[in-house]
Length: 246
Image (cartoon, rainbow, N blue to C red; front, top):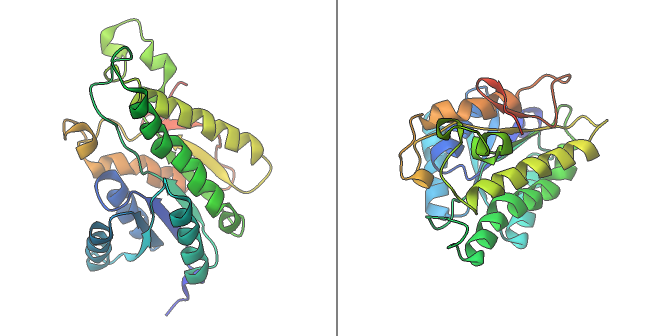
């Protein structure tokens, strides 16, 4: 058997279902060992069992991105099992209570969405940073959305404007994009490459399964950014078609 520390180790948050699950499956298909980060014990266990049955070297990581102690414990688990982390995919996200017209949305809804979609990413990334620095080719992928693009949100034609009016969810992705840039600036000159990826309009429970793409299709951008060469881009925003405007 190959020691886990000799393999490429990835952690995917929110990996028990939807896009996160397919990201874990895609990375596992490369022969990587994949940590399935999820807060629900039963769903996490079921996802790990399903991935392992498909031939993926998967292991469960109890993880609530909004809880400091949970994130600290997750980092300790990965250190104990692998000693380092090669790829972190920050996928866990929530949409919040809809609809979200700015004039009618409770500020508590915005606070809750930002806590998961932005602060949760910062919390997990910082906890995993020492492990990522031990990797030869560390990568961080922040799963964003085209609704976070200010350029697309301000499109002159309705058909060019991304998504519905959503004062919590859409700005949370804009915030995440800005955070990604700040990490890229700080980590410039290190081995870590960090980028944001848009999966497209995927049918998941987050949007009531109204999307037109499959979770597997949505996962492709994360797999691509997780496997960038050492001279690859950092601090950018991509979808399957290429660079997404800020």
